[in-house]
Image (cartoon, rainbow, N blue to C red; front, side, top):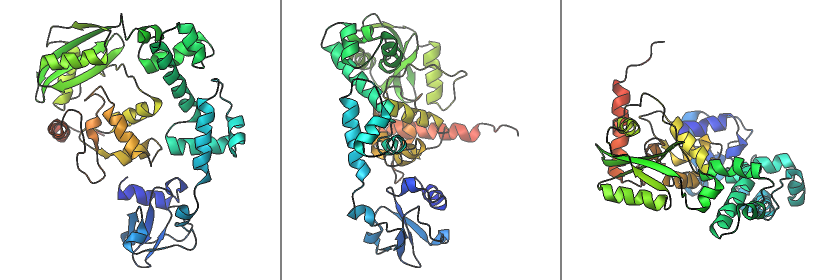
Amino acid sequence: MSDPDFWQAVLRRDARYDRVFVYAVRSTRIYCRPSCPSRRPRPDRVTFHADAEQAGYRPCRRCRPHADRLLPDPWVDRVRRACAALENGDGRLNLAEIAAAVGGSRFQLHRRFRQMLGLTPREFADAGRLDRLRSRLRTGGTITEALYDSGFGSTRALYEKSTSRLGMTPRLYQRDGASLTIIYSIGSSSLGRVLVARTPKGVCSIKLGGDDGDLAAELRAEFPAADLRDGGSSHDPTLQAVLRRIDGTPPHVDLPLDIRGTAFRRRVWAALMAIPAGETRSYGDIAASIGQPGAARAAGSACAANSIAVLIPCHRAIREDGSLGGYRWGLRRKQALIDGERKAAAVRPRKQR
């Protein structure tokens, strides 16, 4: 989050940020929670901190911001026990019963669960069932056995939940994508060689590099049993659309994507695609935009797990201090993508109002 974002949270007295930062007033040398009910100071006298006492400020006696360090949040343990109940459950979600067991209401549990983990209890339970499904499918046995062992109550529930997350049917996943057809094309760009792979559902992988053989080998490692077919033409329309995007020019049409990821990662990727071309956001900004202001590190992990470079623009994510941070395809390419988008945005004519 930037300073204006912090200040807006202070003006709203937004308690969701009480454990994210404190604000300090230079004239009084006192620091407060964002939700403090005291009169708001002038913005030019305010600074924001993770630990204001190190900077010489003393805690407010009204909102007691230092109490968080003295008294542990009981909801940390409650959410931890709720996670264990969801992981050890039989697939049926009764949030009221779980909340009563850990000591709270279903509404409190739902809100605090999402604040701390970035997922709702249902999304967490679904992710756990899918993890168990992956394990069962890999160790053999029938689809039906894996279905019930993982907590899915019916084949309909299995296919509705799992196909969108696995990116393929459970049977195809069990066979490492066998019989899944993936067509790929490789072309040249200002960033070097670019591989674009697609399934019948949409683009499933984009890779950047310098050697065609290495790019194809990486795709094979990602989909070890799929039927990979070389499109054989650098004039492939999908490849050309991606190359235009690399140069900072949006494609004429939105390309469909075949995305595989957890609920949290999908939310981060959606937030990345919502960032205007030519602009950047810190990992903290991205986490806050999906309602999880304390999950900057998890947002960074979601960016690192992105397999569809450029179209899911993880190059727009930077560190809190404004530096580039990491990038799977190298910082030179990351900077070039940002510069290309900024240049294109600067010369693109604005829409008439």
